[in-house]
Length: 108
Image 1 (spheres, helix red, strand yellow):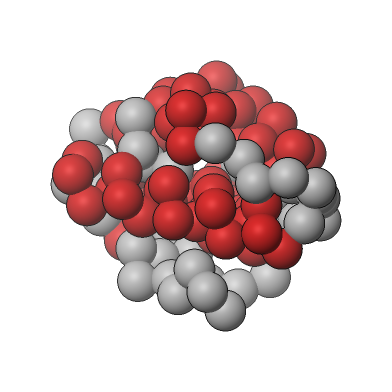
Image 2 (tube, helix red, strand yellow; image 1 turned 90 degrees about the vertical axis):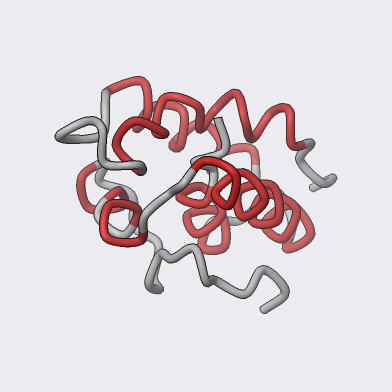
């Protein structure tokens, strides 16, 4: 459920108000875990939809940072792989503006 790393990267690029809770991030990104771990051949429609919805909830830089931290924490425990994670923005047609990675610095 924590393939939220994808989301964290997406969210850094989007604009948005109060910090987003990890429960929301986890729920929106859960469908992406299969692809981000290499189990699924491509991101599912629910994965892309969840990430797009999550991006729309971002109101502030603090929201972006909170989402990023949630995603990074989840990625570590789920075995998310950069080689799959980095493909999600293009596959889901989400413009991020920077490389998506498990190594993204959430504070910048």
